[in-house]
Image 1 (cartoon, rainbow, N blue to C red):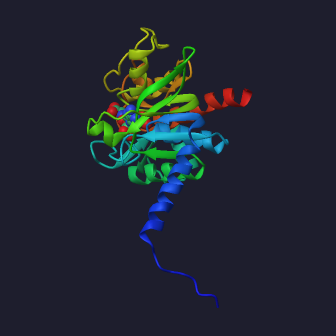
Image 2 (image 1 turned 90 degrees about the horizontal axis):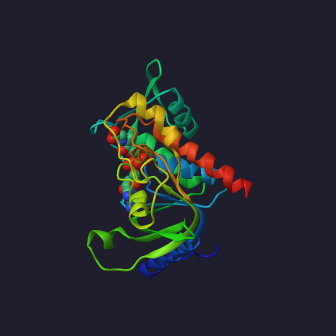
Image 3 (image 1 turned 120 degrees about the vertical axis):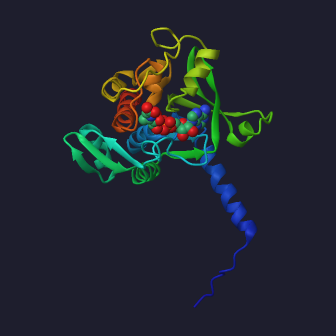
Length: 264
Ligand code: 48H
C-alpha cells in the first residue's frame, strides 16, 4: 500500500486559499451580471441567472449574506409569503406552513440559507466583505462596478478600488438604493419620474407587494433594480416582513435580463 502524506502544512493551507480566491475573482472580472447586495432579492435573481448559464457575481458588503431576511419581523425569525411567493420557496425547497388562505410562513433562517446555497450551487459566485463604491460608465451606460474591501471602507482608509466589467448591473442593495444613489450623484437622471430616487413610502404590504413587480425594471442604461430598492426607487411603500415580493422581483428581473442576454 503506498503511504499517503497526511501531514498538514500551514503554508499549503495559505496557498490553497490564495490560489482559489484569486482564480475565482479573476474569473469574475468580466461577467454578464454584477449584483449589488446578497439579500433575498439579489440572491434570487443571481440563482435564476446562473441556472440559465449566465456568469453572475454578487458583491456583499457584510461578512454575512442574507440582508434583512434573517430577522423575520422584529427579530421573530419567521417570515410570511403569499401564494405566489410560496411558489418560489417551493422551487428552492424551503418548507412553508399554511397559516390562512394566501398566507404561509417559513423559518427565516431555513429560507435564506437554502436560497444562498442554491444560488451558489447554480454557479453564481458570492463575494462577501466587498462594497460597491462607484460604477463604471462608458457612453452613458453603466458598464461595471467599482469595488473595495468593506474593511477599508469601515476603517476610512484611503485605498483605491478595483473595477469589474458587467453587461448588466443589478441594484439589490435594499432600502438605501446605494448603486442608484451613486448614479444620480455622478452620472445624471435615473429613469424615474423625477430623475432621482423617489424614496420609499410608509408600510402598506398590499400595495407594496402589488407594485414591486412594476418597479422591478431598468432604471439607468445598463442598470436594473430589484427588491426593496425597486420600491424605494419608484416611491412605493415598504411591505414589512412579507418576503414574497423580494423573491418574485428577483425572479422577474432575471427573466428580463435573460430575454436580452439570450437575444443578443
Ligand atoms: C455591497 C451592499 C451595499 C454596497 C448594501 O436589505 P436586503 O435584504 O435587500 P432586499 O431588497 O433583497 O430585501 C429587502 C428585505 O430584506 C427588507 O428589508 C424588507 C422586505 N423590508 C421591508 C420593510 O418594510 O422594512 O439586502 C441588501 C444587501 C445587504 O446585505 C447589504 O449589506 C448589501 O445589500 N449592500 N453590498 N455594496 N454598497 N449596500
